[in-house]
Length: 66
Image 1 (cartoon, rainbow, N blue to C red):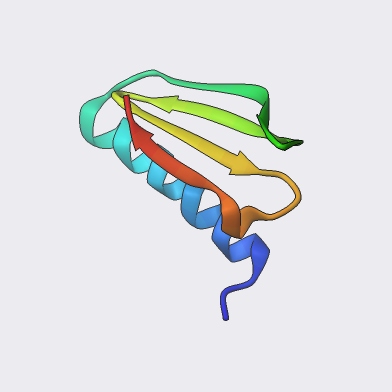
Image 2: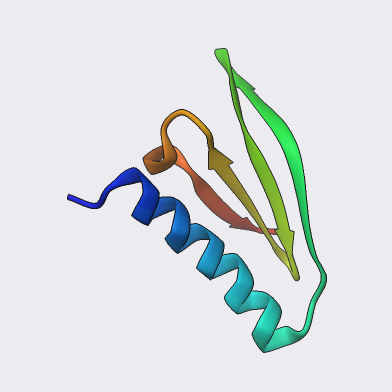
């Protein structure tokens, strides 16, 4: 099983990989996802991909094309 720290690092590397390959700007925002109970985390915009990193449960983080 992957540790939470390793999972978060993988998401950051994914975000940075998109920047390095496309030379795009990375924007990171504090965010709250409200589907039922609010979930705090970070919203990362990389090129045409949005990444939500869940602060409490990183395994529930996700990425979607814009």
